[in-house]
Length: 466
Image 1: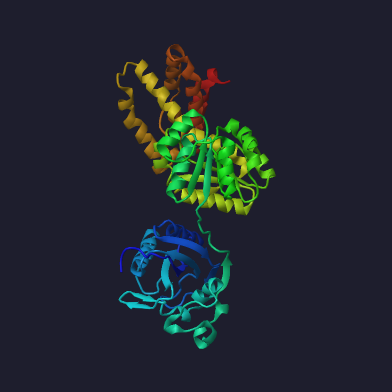
Image 2: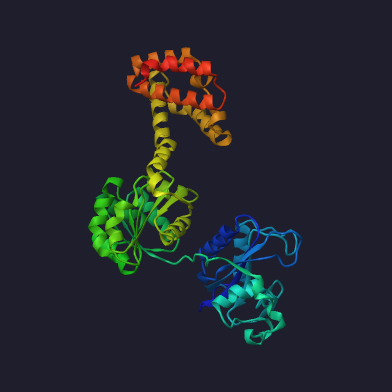
């Protein structure tokens, strides 16, 4: 049977892993299953740990869980979908019952009994596996078993349920959320587009006139409302309100819309430097507050939509519940979530500015100086130089990639460069001197610049010390 099933069928899937980051692999499997067309993950059991059963000796212990799904896929297509998830997470079938990064087994397909090559449901050994029965019984007290067995009549086949140890709470299950974006600039709009693609319902956007035009292109059919109206639409469904306003306006916008939120509603901002205190008006109303910061630049919406998947996303929250929500949203954006403490956000954001904004600034200054030196197409000529330095930095680390007069203690070149800048591009001279001092420090710490060489660099820069 191919195609789709008209009425969704309830099924149970068993997940197991004993390689890599075991808990992360289980969660990734749930997320991947939930992202597939025709599958809705309803809930998960707790995660259990157990010793391996069969297979080679000295395997690591397994983590196991069972998830309940609803699917419109026919049985064999569901089996194929489970195999695709295994492949995505690096499953290799080198030996029977061998160690694995993930195992996704179809335990049941409704109450059907199927016995075909490569597909038998109920799973023929599920009643003999305590690591399957323990999590399964959390979700269904009387599940379908092979041979029409019943839990109530199982005796010797039941297995030793005491041999499995509770390890972690249930895995997070993505559910469709109702989302409103207030201040749908480039970043906010890209986030809304990706959340919509992940299956969430974007019910409203708000912002200035440019936001209306942006939303009409990227979110056709989504109403453009006032901030208060947009917030109320999401809040009425216990949804998520994304404040995409500029950092200096987040507190103002939050105060203006806070009366529409309450318990069960999440309010988040996208700032990398600002804390959660900007959301205090929403928190005072009982809303869950958090921030998500994509470690990515958004020169335009199209680039953001393309580049945000695969990027890191900093999650800042004050409760574990809020952090779990933020991590789930980050994964649904296609990002890689990481926890970001509230008190270090300004320092973290300064690092992000150096890594992106100031990198662009330095290249812009270089282009202007090349043009002043008579190069007609400086961007094309400098590109191989810039790309080599950039690629080498990430391939070998900054200490190995760094070259230039400051790194080798060439004080004479520094003096000549600064004299030329002072005469022809005086605004660039202080930045050159500051970066030369920083470069000398990196080289010295790496053991590539002697104390005498560093002293010579400092002497050349003394005029430019503030």
